[in-house]
Amino acid sequence: MADLRSNFIGIKSPNPFWLASAPPTDKEYNVRRAYEAGWGGVVWKTLGEAGPPVVNVSGPRYGAIWGADRRLLGLNNIELITDRPLEVNLREIKQVKRDYPDRALVVSLMVPCEEEPWKRILKAVEETEADGVELNFGCPHGMAERGMGSAVGQVPEYIEMVTRWVKQNSRMPCIVKLTPNITNILYPAEAAKRGGADAVSLINTINSITSVNLDTFTPEPTIDGLGAHGGYCGPAVKPIALNMVAEIARSATTAGLPISGIGGITTWRDAAEFMALGAGNVQVCTAAMTYGFKVVQEMISGLSEFMDNHGLTSVDEIVGRAVPKVKDWKDLNLNFVTKAVIDEDLCIKCGRCYAACEDTSHQAIEMGEDRTFRVKDDECVACNLCVNVCPIENCITMKELPLGEVDPRTGRKVEPYANWTTHPNNTAANAG
Image 1: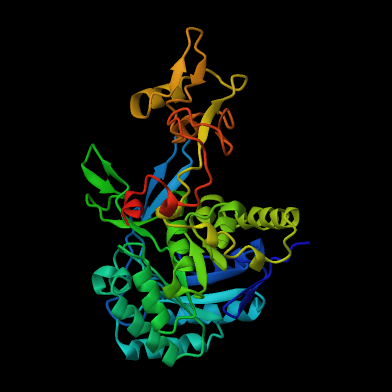
Image 2 (image 1 turned 30 degrees about the vertical axis):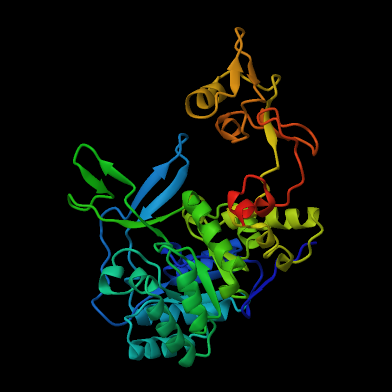
């Protein structure tokens, strides 16, 4: 049987599925329910100390993006860090950790960029016997306006400085939570590593406005006739998160830096993809808010079955396995050739592939008088658009042309050039 136990930077949990710091982890009641449902760990919602009091809006806190079937694709969140008293949170954290010693409990923190407030709050958190701290350098709304959250996460010098303070003033493992609202995710990751971070977690939410009410011309969610930007999360952000995780995992400058993956994780498959790209564990929020805490049970059973089917006995055997296959575009083999193939038995004759290819691609699909569709190999560039717009799974597939076969579009044989640097179309290589 697969062993799902996780040891992330010395923090042990029965499985790699943690709840991210967010509304679901705001108090003892929720966290106890999460542990009972099966979550391996929890990152307690961000605590603060100094500065103006935290007061959340009493109106709507979430905007949403839905798919055609009203499946929730993304949430825009304008909620701030916890507005509950610090001493109440600390008391609850201490009690929950004592009652669930086998579960991971990490505390998210956000205070101003001054060493003394960090010293005070770290000392208070240590007394709870929590397993570690996560530095919230990613929240893009509300707290950023006060010089915290993403206002820190967008300045590598601040990240390095605060992380170093935390490591100098605490015995607890330190995870630095990174913002995606930046041009290059390596800069903050490198700064966290220089500061002595034990790990990074990413991504935090993406700055966003999800919609505008066209009757009132007000951004949503609307508070007394006004709206504000918030943090976007949910399944729609997963591709962005996967890329940023992979960038850190494959960079020489951040090599060996443990990663906790966050961003749109809804199923065990999502979690496995994050781990394959270098995440040692994963954190989940929107899926729990959409389906409830018991969604973790499907994640546990699904990952366990996947590992059994692939002969994997530990989650560590998944971590990073896809990283060597993530390359820059220049390293791709330009002599790898595929062509689209339509299965007429599965085709429902909707014509979406034809319309998409004819209007927006390479006019490589022809429609017969009986509304049958055929791919013209000499025009097909294997862009894969037809596969993606077809509503029937496996109706259109991509067939690889074997070595030695002539590509009907170019008239050139498929040959085993290794990559772009040896390809005859590389004018730079030919010139030098």
